[in-house]
Length: 243
Image (cartoon, rainbow, N blue to C red; front, side, top):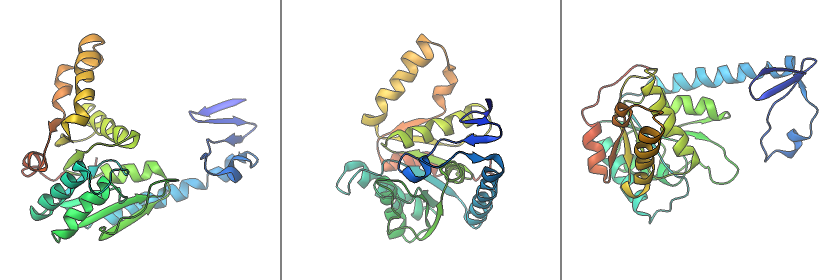
């Protein structure tokens, strides 16, 4: 048995990749050969090429992340609508994951203000669908290619209350800036009731108790409670190149 890369185990050049749990037919198939799997590289390359081409005509992008599960009458849904509107009126391009919940809210605000409203979508087993306020959308098969495109060119990022996906995207952006793989840009955490516990944990446990981050790392993000506060942090930001 040879383990070539993390996440796949190879035996005599036959590899077993992790399979989506919602696809029992794939899970029951025989392990694929390396020669078969290598063809996936071309699909991955195509998604990157198409994705960067898709974004190339946009400017002043701000990406907004958040839960797909929050309903229209939720406070943070309404706040995301207001933020999308403020950004659009300020000449920014609003980018979301294109799904329901917070993503729909931000797209809705941009759409109603008459500005660009972009959705970078992916199909998930339960909650993902393209929302009706996306004026320009692109679908992706691979989660990782979609994530790259959502973070490739933003001059600011806003993180609203969300689940594992939102948390993953939050810490990915912070890591890229911390390690200087991305230019410093405004990273805004919208919703003190949601984010306070995490920011206190970062300070008390991660910084002070375990010392696994530096004091300056806590300055990489801004915690706010309203769309107006978020917009004030973004309005003077500058466009940046792809990371």
